[in-house]
Image 1 (cartoon, rainbow, N blue to C red):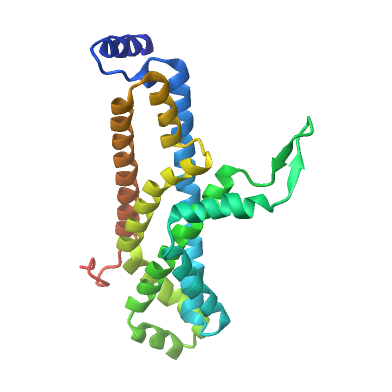
Image 2: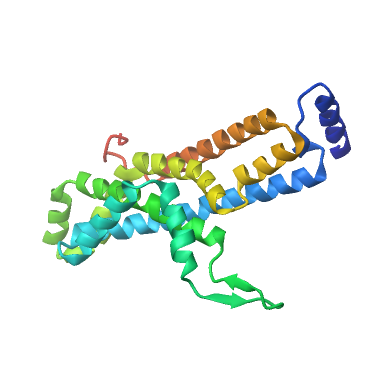
Length: 251
């Protein structure tokens, strides 16, 4: 079966459509590695950005002092500067002053590699948008819910965690889906610091095989599938968490 597929794409290459990733073992391995790194970036950065967004929104909601000022400064900084500049700053500026270790043959090895810096940069960038997403969700919950919880003997923190947060999350799904779609597309910026993600390996393949148009179309289809999968998952979670009679999705 695999041999038949390879034969088909070799014949297709003779007609001018050169998809080496389907018949050349080396290109296929490179491509799968890049796709795997892209998926790992999406998963890790989505998780950390959601955590950052939730913590930041909680600080803005519950604190009015220094903590809230720091979060507002972080959001303003990361939302209003280019992602590529942020990634270069972390990788070249911060990375250059980080301690290094030695490998088995005595060569210096940085404490954090390009993949780690890409995760940090993308998570902080997307997290800044998620802070505002979750904060808006909290603001959409009517104050009467918190007042009812306080009347039942809840502390303000208990009312926030047990009542406000679950309801705010339901208001945040649409905006969160947009943020995660943007994050999925933004993983291509990791190319700039040498992370072997999908764009990086695709560039290597089309440079070697001179099949730029074919690889561009493959990348387009893959990112359409990835962003569609993100939206589908968020919509499924939103449907599973829907409360009858609450919000626009209620019945």
